[in-house]
Image 1 (tube, rainbow, N blue to C red):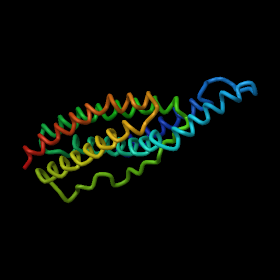
Image 2 (cartoon, rainbow, N blue to C red; image 1 turned 30 degrees about the vertical axis):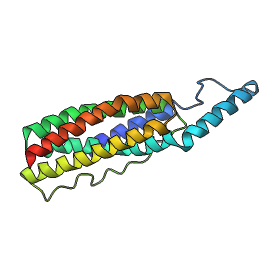
Image 3 (tube, rainbow, N blue to C red; image 1 turned 45 degrees about the vertical axis):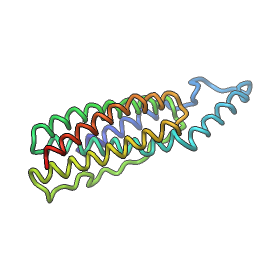
Image 4 (cartoon, one colour; image 1 turned 120 degrees about the vertical axis):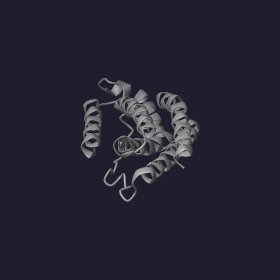
Length: 187
């Protein structure tokens, strides 16, 4: 499991490194200095606030969520829990890919480190108790993500990142509703 995450992170970093250079994709010369300073001020504005804050939250949250979903598929007792985890995993991997593409064209944003060791720690729970704890964790994580995305709608200025957020909110809302229904069945 750690290998999958490590490979995903390495691939993302490699993609970012391969796409290095300035945001305009071309070479700079002294005649472009006025427009470069305008670009630099926009970059500084984005880098100091909403965009970087959102990336700092979203990348670790999504990476850890993928690990939890894989644990649900692997360790969950109920077939319905496993089915929901499979469906949500596809959506979270799609979000991971979408954000990676976004970051490849926004080099002024940095990818935060993600600590994945000991992410899923439900080893003392078994059977229905494990399923219940996992479902509670999914509700907590999706509630937090939804709150952060809704807050970021007013803080993020980059239209491409804002589109990702706006398109993802309904998906997160559906995940949250799904795990709440699942929780009501596991009590």
